Image 1 (cartoon, rainbow, N blue to C red):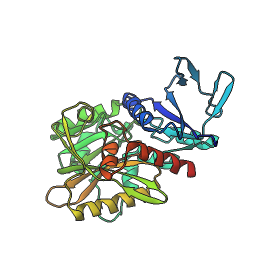
Image 2 (image 1 turned 30 degrees about the vertical axis):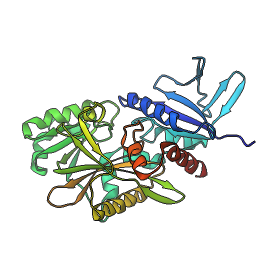
Image 3 (image 1 turned 30 degrees about the horizontal axis):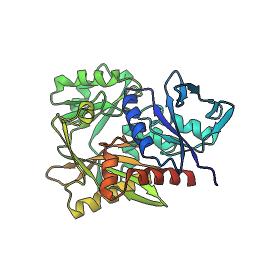
Image 4 (image 1 turned 120 degrees about the horizontal axis):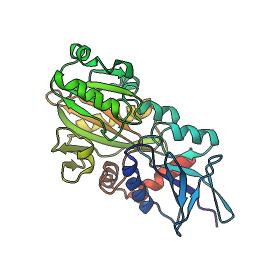
Length: 335
């Protein structure tokens, strides 16, 4: 009987998003078919990389080759299924390590992960994609923090979105309606930990908000049904994302045939131009009055709980989460 592939399912991380990563990994673990794969849940923190066995004993990962030594057995993994949102799972750090030791993984590669964690760099790469629009923006480095507000008021039109240039889950993000509010919003974004000490200020796009998942299967980029996000908060911030009752999510979204065909083309172009791998999720605004899709950001390790966007979209596409995660694993093993 052939050996089952051994999968390291990675959770934890270095940022506030670690709590979300734990929930995502738990959901993925529940939906990976254990008759086809052996799965080990590995927690990664700044202090320790470890696996907890069924008896509750903790075993440290050997970082020389990302393996486990348990009761005289040397366990080597065939694949890392990365479910760490933010650093080090989404910014290229783990991908670079896995590239060095020759271990395959489910996410985008080192370069793509590093680029896509930086919102400004991502927008520059995507510039020129047909039918995709980009809001005007300014990037601030740490040395520019103190006196940024006045110069931005001359370059951009209110209102603004202010956010860490390399953050996730809308942590440290603010919507600014008056210039007097801008400096405090900039300071808040700079104070957000593990986000690269850069801040991006963008013109606000008024319209409907959508998020669209995609993944590659047998060489084809499959775009999942879109989700429309309608929040009671001023914008889709961390609280709106994770506190029940603050957001209505409609999957599949109420887009007409032309709009969905257009966003499908855009997502496929984004996936291709950024050289993505595995599953991604891209957020857009559909501008009121113009019907233009504006890029917001891309998420290369999207959340995976029963109510998260990607599982919603997978179900709307007619698949089970088990089928979907099996396809993600097999595609990465073939890479």
